[in-house]
Length: 526
Image (cartoon, rainbow, N blue to C red):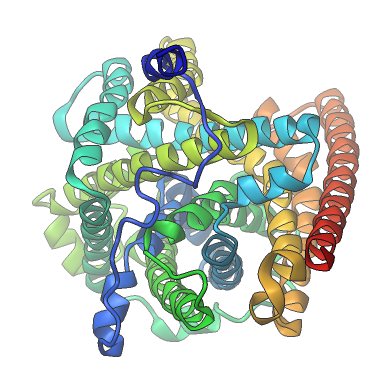
């Protein structure tokens, strides 16, 4: 009786100790029958890739892609392509880690690191999730305002109610959640295919833009406060988000697998990779369509207000549109309404995935667990605060200044993702390179290791190169010389701290993997 009493009490606590399987409630709950054809088997494995792909087409991607198209035509198409290919590589490794090791990225990292570093990595990932959530709050609130004319402050608070949607979804089963996410992706895809098809873009120029040039990462020219490299970094930061790696390593474990059967493991890795690559290809198409919208739907330089408000207005303003068919359809208001509907769908999708990821990193790094509704409520309420501050502090300003302030907050919230990204990419690469964790069959091949390290080091370099400019953006469009100096000092201090933390992370994981290898060998010898 005395042994059961604490357990009973523990169930009533909001925060509980957790050190079990990743997302225990849904881990291994989806049966996959054997002996089916390729397409039927792929269908049974499809779903986790969609949950990951929505992070690559959330509201944070919209502004960067459309504005990049407006400013530099199809120049940054190659950045979207490169980001998508890197994402496919990273998500393949994340899914493989979860399937083979039966641990998500947070758990596998924490096993090899000390308590202090594990806590720091948890805080960084939580902040990255909240930075992403800010974009979702802004996107959802603006969509409610545009569709239903709900005052913006009230709309911001209404986004908190998506916790009720999450409560409903937790009751219907994980397979149905995957289906809902796929339907919302198809809504977003359908809206942009329709709008781009009407605009009749120059497809030759689109495909030419997929090839990177020396101009792609140039610091000149500067158009409306954006350079090619800042536009490229905005797309990279909004696309390759750290929390998606944690999420995929967890949701890839929802399928039942016989871990004593290497063939079953190999089959699961294979079809999970197919699922991921198909869904990320759809995300690539959506992001490409967003950039094409910026070039082909609007007249060059016509959108002076790059916020979602401005884009909504531009889609119903015949003077900003590029051809007669678009102008005819815009008069009915269909283009702008469809844009707002897609924006709302994008935000709701991210609600589901952001909450699941938060649970994964909390359980993995600090062994704490909360009900999903409580988890969502806490992170959303924290994310609402900076949005409300931006809305209230600009309430006396002109409408366009309010819009730009909110848009700048959304774009600046993506800056932190650049800090957090290497701290999930490097552990992922080291863990999937490890024979101790993956065995001989499933550890990364030579070409995956080479491409992985090139991607990691290349992204770190670009993030560091663009960091001073990103910090300067917090001082407005025209910072003074003193503000520029302050921004540079802050940037260089941050770069120093990032390098120290990266070295600490690499060292701890290397030493931790070495200890595990030695203990495995000792167990075999005994």
